[in-house]
Image 1 (tube, helix red, strand yellow):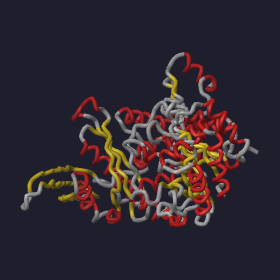
Image 2: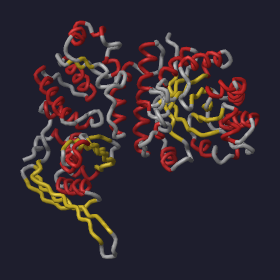
Image 3: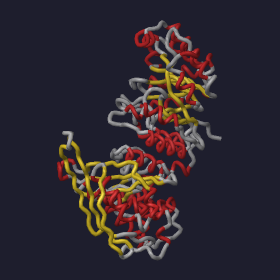
Image 4: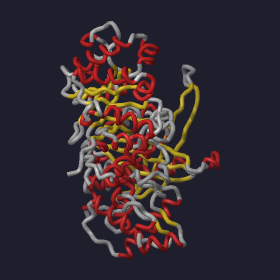
Length: 536
């Protein structure tokens, strides 16, 4: 039986420290649900009491099927009991499965950063762990600056781990906090620690400041660490954290460990990685290991010919194991296989002809060349497929729309902007003409369109736009750049879906995404099962 490695995700805290990244509570809930579906053992939600976003998230905490929900905080302050420390109270009140405490494991940092002597720091660790166990069934220590502390004073660094174990910690996690430790140093130090700390209690947490976070994690595992901490796509402060998207398949496929991720879940790894980037409005890294668009891409010539004969010549793993696909420019076989896999995920209970699949594949590649990407807009992808297979028709037809933005001073002298949308649509042979105001042009357009459709499709009253993202695809074009719009929608049944639009005109792109969002809502409601549904 394969030895078990436990996966601990810190995306919702460490990832939020990435420059330019900000998670809303809704983002956190969606990301946490995806991580749980992947089969991770621990999901750290953030730091209760640290900011309003984390407070909102913990007040409406998610329910997981496999993962344990973790609250992060720090050891008690000097000269105060853990039971009465105001910094620890929010962690105790969060009622989480796990409390993870960060504590100094370097004498230099304890004295310099905290202003306490080494002995008091040890008591802070032990007391905080022991008190936390009264409020949570599992407590662990993130030993901050452990590797630097060990190199400066190994006896004291080890004493910090022993203090945590004395307090009852189930895990002690060795942190390379500034990311400066090199692989050979990590291997040596973890090997030393594993002689004292039972490996079933030993974890590793690395940063990527020397671009060695994944390598350092793998060497730590080889020397005894049995918990691995990291983030989706390696997000994190400065240069990032160890990338779980790389570590999961490497640990499972290369080193043969049981990481708690099933084969079926790992086949969704590419979708998880790219969908996460799309949620953050970031361009996925085409060169990312395992999941990048170029990870299994082969140009024409000798390599492509060899891959077609035996993929093992130039591919270190089967791309389907991680949900990716081979891209050989002289063959579309990999594209067909990938498309068939997406059909299965969508629940399409038909077997499209080879001609239909080929036509859909050509359409998708053409649209992707224009800037469409469906990793973060699965609803638009499903509509594209179902339209191509003749399963749905448009439920309404746009005749025209006009959006006006007026910026002016109101009667009391305040500068205000007013948006107004006028739209004309045809529904089941009847023309509808409506005008609506909104908080911005897209919101006004949404209001006008749904007012026009509500008499025929009343369920649209229970749909709302919950997120709106814009990305510039050709910044070199300045104000004439092509833009990509992704809209996230939800309804009163708890369903959430994402749609996409691409155009040089941002309002036009927004309308296309909105059109798909409404169409998908009608599809979910079974409208297209009714024979009278036609646009004109």
